Image (cartoon, rainbow, N blue to C red; front, side):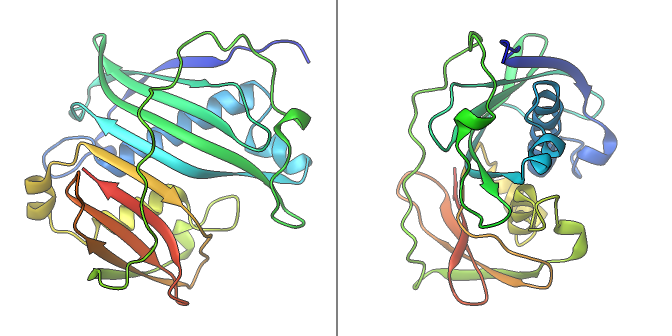
Length: 243
């Protein structure tokens, strides 16, 4: 396979539909934009959703960290860039940045795997991952937050029943919709007071249409709180460190 361009940069606008009551781009909209440009770049280098479907594979994200310096305002023209890092045996990394006038507003670091539809086991990256010079930028050196899965004494903050509009091409709840549902458990006043600058997320189990997930929170030593989403069996399917 010939070498491909490991990165993509495009101009995008913060549309009114992406913004909250303060005319600022919402956190779920920032993550949606990351997914959109990631999908565009993946298709351009032969590892998009359609190409993987032909191989009997589908993408999942296992870890994702969003850092926000400043949320864009409505109608801002933005520069969104995404790039892939060299892959390991069964996982790869994709990073993303959002900038305005040369100033970085948001940064995403994410870890992905491609699962086989027949048995949900990870595929080997060497079988389909593109060859590249990988020359744009190394990942940041901040490790992902370590979070325990025991939320037995955590405080309930809300429930969410997964609907048809939450489901993506993999047939399960889209990653961003866990964040959207989690933040929906909090009021506008609470979110304004928290002024979230970082979300460190882990996606552990897949959830499906009709499932009900329960969101609980516990104090965090180095942030605002840690949130867990529990499925109907009481197992943690999603965790987030909120800072």
